[in-house]
Length: 298
Image 1: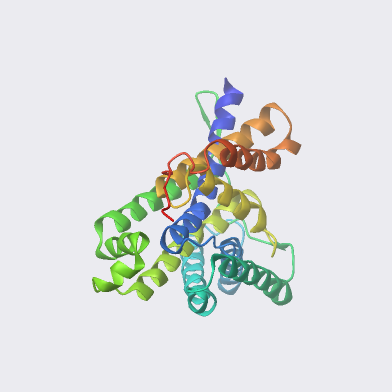
Image 2: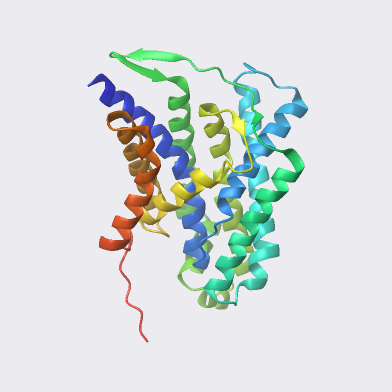
């Protein structure tokens, strides 16, 4: 039972990181019906922003909680600005094009950002351990402080996102635009501004992701967003692409699946879990766990 609870905590922690990235996918899809494959590179750029800010401020191992919060906020702000820039320069001019053209554009932006980071900063850069890990023994289960931190930050951000979407004027605009851009525009809603805000919010949620991910593996690399980004996309599809609760649920299921496979079978199978889940969902429930089947009239 001790191993089970240990794997449960680790799986929830990993799934929480996937959830932060998956929300960016699902929010953009809900608004534009676009799979933003550049979102994983937004995650990666957030890690480099955190690294550069830490270096500029002279933060080293054990710097403490306040520096860690500042680094996370800088990563969030950098990701938000980058998300809005990508939407304005790459996606907005293609908005009336086919979905295939927009998808190719997203892949192109992804490749561009990877190579830009490689050219500017290189690979395998060490990130300081700002908050040293502490292990607590809770009822015989070894609980890492970093796992609790990841879950806590994710929970707070989920509550804030729900409040923004459900209780604010801009959230109402986002829901209206996701339903029909044309109708929203006729009702006086600034569609371009709303879409830009959606990109900013989805990208900002990915900002704490690299910082929390670096607590587990403190190495910054231009390719670091590819794996978590792909798995977060699978989590979004699993939960129902376009559904915010679905993205969170799918990410937690995927994180738990990976962790239990690693703990009880073999770590070499953990990456295969995401693809197996994706294939099963596409075969038996393409709309996802929280998605709704829609009928398109032709």
